[in-house]
Image 1: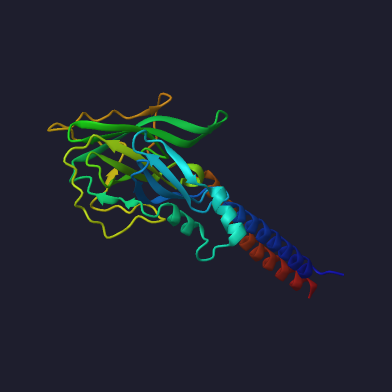
Image 2 (image 1 turned 180 degrees about the vertical axis):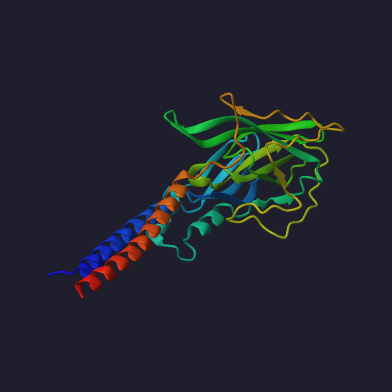
Length: 311
């Protein structure tokens, strides 16, 4: 027949085992992810079709091997040259052996193309203005921000050179831009944007490439010691870090500050989207640990009293 201490020990072990299982399940689910960053790098120019070729590595979803894209200097449109499916086929059929890897195949395609060189945006009198446009939620029934849409204007001195749409997460996040000169072109560059592209799972870095023309007196003399690789763009003296709330200087006068943006008539927030799921996990774990500790103390006290009574 079980005494009080045995019953309490069994109950405590059962509660502890249950807590461990639940905590492990919560921890596992909290680390599960289907999102990931997207990096672009290795910019090369092909004179025969007037496209800039670049490698893109997307770590979202199931993940893909590096892909090769090209962007037209005439239209600004991008298209895939060597796809995720083609890379996976090479890996499945031949493996990642030397001479048959995905990277080797991309190098073969771009062999003989001309590499782009980074320029100093500030020394070329280039400024960039980012303005909030609208919010996109996860769905019509889910009042949670998926991404925010912005309109970007690129200027050289007082001249507006380009305008294009980009996405981000919060209104106070930084947008980092780098410029790359194209061999044989003195009035056209490609502009790399590196920023948090959406709010999914707290947001991931997403990089995009844009064509900008109409420049004057382009200075290509900047030499960078670092080559853009499979990582987020590193800010430097040559890059521009831009915030949505920044104004830009056009000529001698600064434009008036933009009034606070609103979303559906409500002042827009300027922080990152709260990660309510992470907060819930923390609260649950803390509560369970506290309950285990209290249960242990309570169990020892009850067990001690039961032993004294039995004696």
